[in-house]
Length: 495
Image (cartoon, rainbow, N blue to C red; front, top):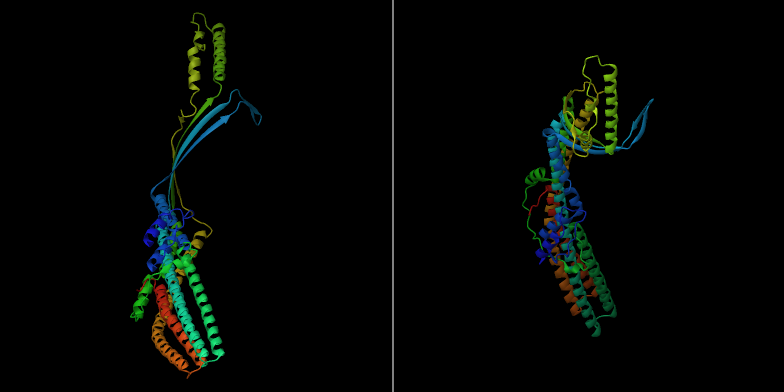
């Protein structure tokens, strides 16, 4: 049933739309550790924030490669309008008898080759690796936290079972005290003390149940899904056996050095910092810029008659000049000029109107243009050495941070390893104490039953048994928590 619910929930929560991510329609009623880890990886919002960093980092790599091997291309288009009227420039006045409309386009191609473009692909890959390492580290940390919280819920549930056992014991002790009081073998004080002990056990059961609810709420918070209103419907199905730890400290230290997510993340960041240093040093190389462009335009008068009228005026003026030349400048015997050829014909007017139809896409192409520039800054007021020095210091600091974290991880692994050994030995001791306390309680109960012991002795034995059983539970789950802490320090599961 859980897997069908999980599939429905995952289909309802697509990872591509984090801001509109739907929640699960229902929660699993039987929850194993693997299911809890899977839900946490898919829905925990803190982890998802880190996982979202991979997309920009991957596009940064593509962008760096494109800048190195591919030119950038741009296209522009424009429409313009200029109304009729007068314009004045300094002492000159220009008059436009008709409004004009026009359009234009331009296509541009540019490419740059420099030390920065050569260094960017390597830097971008290093930053992508650092982002992936951070994501892996966040996932490992999340899974470790979920495991520990899963154990906390199991431990709280074990405390509830112990509280229920204690309540049953106090019920039995109350009946025993009442029976002995009725036959005159005990006082009313014993009955009242038994009633108080039973009431305290009821309070303890309520508090233990409240602890289970709180721990389950924290588990659902880590999984990133809403908890049900009635948390009692959710049951944790996994259990963890207690086995003697047989790991070698040297093997664990070697595994931690290779797998610890914090160390790997810092290593990736240090590698990216070293790439940044190389990119800073590449500023000493020259820069080559290439650009090319294509363009065109159209221009059209909104009033066709304005052009025809201008053409008619020009033709009339030309005819007058031609007639004047024939009358005043023609030598005797020469053939007069044919001034009728300068007249504006209807065909000429139609051609003028046709030419004034270029807008918007009958472009007049402009000549192709291209440019190549080679530049080499010679002196930058020590700006380049400053940037290189900063990048080198940042890279050195990053590697020192790796070494510091490695030392911290070795300490954490060693401490968790010794704590695990102590926890395992504590289980054996607490198991012995529990058996002894149970036997002490049984003897005290029999002594009180036959009248040779007091109720105070019975209460003392009961408290000792309860404490021993609680200590045993804490020892068992302390052992499991120690393994979880060791796994977190190493950076991978150990069982």
